[in-house]
Structure formats: structure tokens, C-alpha cells
Image 1: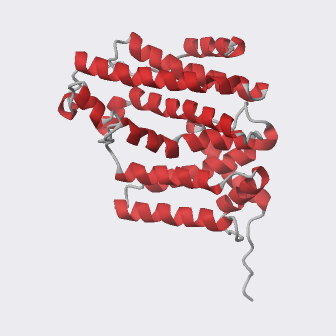
Image 2 (image 1 turned 120 degrees about the horizontal axis):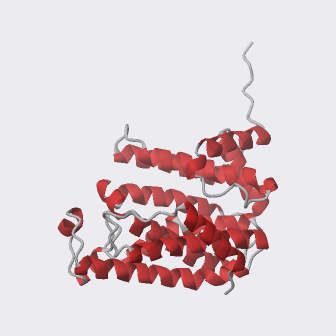
Image 3 (image 1 turned 135 degrees about the vertical axis):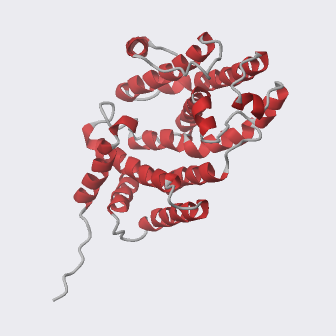
Length: 289
């Protein structure tokens, strides 16, 4: 007699997602102490969804077109899970998360768009193009977190976008050398041209006045975004506020270190050490607008 196929229960689906999240704990930015216990499984579901999509994008066994197809299929499952009964445990958990917190499915779809763009674009012509990428790769994450905490106000989401974009840009400036090894350049071509710096200079790790002025321009712009988003930190619950202030301070600290190191990100990749973390936490506890 043929055994009937049974779908995973919602509880087992969330457990599956939590296993994925905790297996990659070192890369897992949220879902720990700042998230109330009753919300952690939903954060794990979102992480698992994004993690698997990221794995598709990085799957070296397949050609670029095949990876794009995998991402396209993953997005179709996302769109259909809202209206159908999915069998995949990740989408069982995602469907429940979307339902419970009224998260727009487009925000999760934007994350997949970012993974597709990672495969297609390895250079950005203008700052506008780079900011457009951040609107897919970074901003949805902040908005999703706000939905999980019950914040649906458009103004809060707008402020979150400033911080998330600033964090993404900070990561780009911090990892210029690392990304270059992957043939990725996030410094906008127009900005490089404006300051008289080219890709050959970048590949040769030439640290001259042109590069210093170029990176100073980018980090100054990024600091401006952080400052635009700062009011969000005191517009949410105390628990979330503390985390946002710590994240905000950490991002600004990285930018300050880039400046302190003379903008030499080729030889001095800025990182947050234990002393920085202690200072960031103390700042977060006393921060005001």
C-alpha cells in the first residue's frame, strides 16, 4: 500500500528554519538577544529563506544562467506560497510569518532581486545606480524587522532605509580589497572619473590623493545617510532602540576608522574589536537625537 505524503507541520517547518539559521550563527545578524523569544522563529524563517537564495547565487557548479533560473524558481515559490499550500518547510514558515505580521511579499522578493543583480552587475556607473541596488539588498531587511516589531509607519520605514543603505555602503567601503578579488567594484565609475582614479589604479592598490579624496567623498556621503536615519533610534521600543543605536554606532565607527587609517583600506581593513564593542554599547545606552 502506497504511503501518503504528509506535509511538514508549521512547528516542524519553523524548527527546520531555525536549524539553518543557527548553523550559520556567525553570519546571522539578528535573532539573538534583541529579538523577543516569541519572534525568533519568524526571524529564523526569513533568514533561512534568504540564506538558501544566497546559496543559489553562489552555487559555482552552475553557470550564471542556471543560477538565475534557480533564483527565479525560488521567487515563484515565494509568490505562490501566499495563496497556496506549500510543501517546502521554508515556505510553510514564510507563509505563516507573512500572514502573522502582514509583511508585504514584495520585500522578500526584493531580496531575491538583489541576489540576481549580484550575478548580473559587478560595476556601478553612478551613485544613483548603487543606491538603487541598496534598495533591494539592504532596505527590505530593515523594513521587515520593523514589521516584526509591529511598526508599519511609512516615516519609520523611510528612516530605516537611510540606516540600512548606510550600513550596506559602509560594508562596501570596508571591503574594497575583498570585493576586488571577486571582480566586484562598488565605487561608482562616475565618481572615480570625477576624482581622476581608474580601475587600473584600484587593482594596483594605489593610495594617492585621488583615491583618498574619492573615498572621503563616499564615506562623507554615507555618514550623512546615517545621520538622516538617526531619529529612528528613539522612535521605537526600548529593546529595539538599543540594538539600532548599537548598529548605528558600529557603522559610524567603521567609517571613522577608515578616516583614521588615512583611507588606506588596501592595507588596513577596518574592523570592530572588543574595545570598540564596549564603547559602542556604552554609547548606545546614552544616545539621544
